[in-house]
Length: 93
View: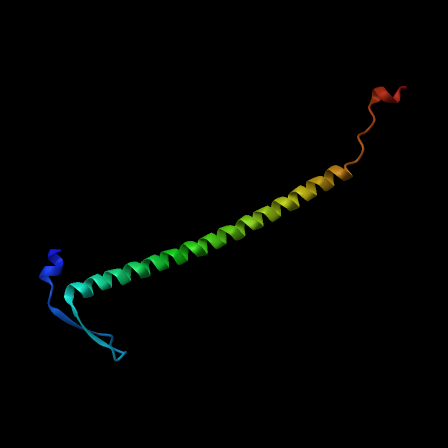
């Protein structure tokens, strides 16, 4: 609260390339800058997390596909396995 009381001077704020100007109390300008920084920081952090989440989902799908290929190859080997050789005991009959 003392920040707002001590900084009541009017600040002339202009966005240089744009023709807009505003006269705001200094405390309001400082709070506005901090708020905009928090929103931009959250947006950047959220964008990075979203990108990493999409990469993770793609890797999971890739892993599932590779596992399915291994399972299919294992099933093929079991199906095509050569017959076991006859033992010496069964050949004497």
